[in-house]
Length: 203
Image 1 (cartoon, helix red, strand yellow):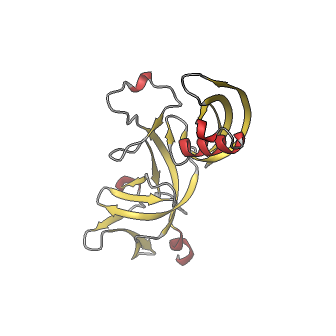
Image 2 (tube, rainbow, N blue to C red; image 1 turned 30 degrees about the vertical axis):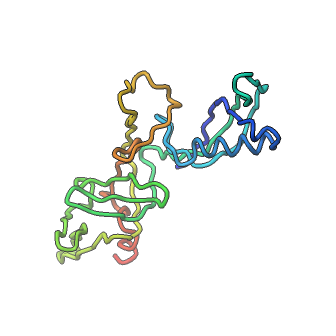
Image 3 (cartoon, one colour; image 1 turned 60 degrees about the vertical axis):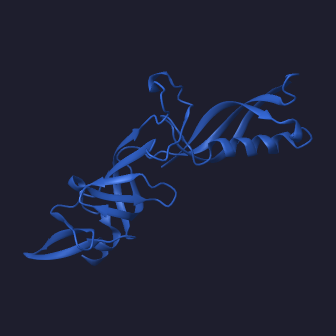
């Protein structure tokens, strides 16, 4: 679910911070630049893991600030396909259910990936698994807020930069958007042991 990815970035320290501790300023800069951001084809960056190398600092006369090339590693959320994760139901519709891990909310379980047979309750706006218990149908609800075990079946990165050819972007480009999700996951609960965790303790 979590990986450690290596990056390289030129960090600019403003003249007003020249007397500050260099390492502290670099850490602040890197976290503000990447934390809670999606990097194309890498994943959702969470927090700085460590700094591997700080190059020589260069001060340009026209700037007054100094620039340092920094090689560092960041903790990244990017589960692998087929990995089993735990999330909570955020919302549901006839198309499927949206799950959240608490820090990542772009997880979608489409209707075709629900337990079979399932139906969408249009009144309560929840998915219901019609479980066959020795000939008797037991309705098991996937209510909002329920804890769910799911399997990752696919992931998608989308370049959300306006007016830019995504094929020309470096993999280090940061994608942010309010209208589109730059990184999303499709999951399934259509397997034994998957779905609402409470189902399997009650059966």
